[in-house]
Length: 509
Ligand code: SF4
Picture 1: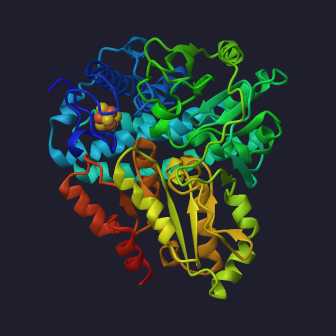
Picture 2: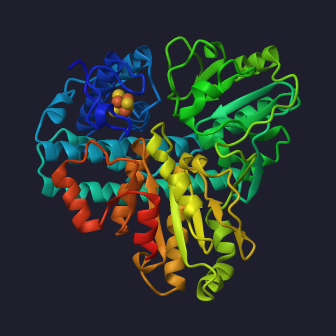
Picture 3: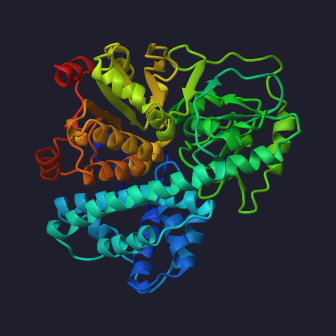
């Protein structure tokens, strides 16, 4: 075994990547990511439990984010991060990977959940927001990974992480809406105009804003990609006329969609796949994203190399028609909490009158497995008196479908990026208050798709809030041991997806 990684849904044979990553991560890189994690555990121990040093906190947030799936494939930058935090007490991650199966499972939930939360803390930090409780948990959680703890001690910590992640998502929501305004519904085209353009992928709205400013008046159009789509909903971003539309579908299709593209692509966060020679000269990374041989834009956020490349390549000569995976060319986004709650009265009346029978939150990550077609079919087969709330890139399975409206509201409402799970939680809580019941008693079912570690921290938040009967797929995490799965099923009724027909019948009766 030359490496050990089982943190994402596409892990080899549903067990673990041990020779090389299915994601393209090489064994050396995986081992360096373990070394970085071990060094961060050592750093957390050295810092003790007092007020942490800001540079140490930033190193922890960025270090954890760097180890999220499809973020960093570059040994050089990982070595630099390790050197920057290296102490005398680095933890050997093999002690977890080769230890007791249930403890490994619980420590994996803790570590992978913190990796996901670090992404949100990183984006909030870019907008000047930070939170003492969130930061303190990174130290507490990392220290716990290095200690000999039993299930009784780890389980409360994992639930605490779920609660802290809610705070972290709330902080990011405040950072995004504070900087860019309250999201409002937006219709986004998938067609590309003639002329120079830049595709922006990932989640970082700050990076997009800098690029929009720097491309103003230069005759370059900007297109979002994958998780950047909800940017169109923010007033301070949509005010730029050259923010034109959305290019392509979800992250796992990038190697075919970027093939010989006449434009540069900027990756602000995951999900970056191994870069093919047909477009490697036009990929740029920034922030924690890094790939060997690919030009990296530094902290000064000077996007001149990206802009020069866009002007050099020139874009398509004629307008290019592109569609979503179901053939539609218009995507709706911007149904975050304020939009949905502004029509709460209409929604509540529609439920009381029987026009809306059930809400589904069908969201999470997309991925390459054929089984993910479940989510397209689930939405297609959902009855006309049901509403589909969605978020994150799993929506690309169905967000170009027109499945109609109820009372003037679209039946599919895109709430935003994965971190906008915060919006979904606020809406669910508001509905439960309006109907004077618990969230679990609402006519609401969560049907989630997971791929990487941000989905782990969101799942922990939902569990910490006591939300039950969550359907999860396309497969269960390899790092959940049979005993821990039993615990989750018994206490939270966590349910693996089966078929759309069977699940819809089970839910709706
Ligand atoms: Fe394998 Fe996923 Fe780890 Fe990549 S991130 S090495 S695919 S488990």
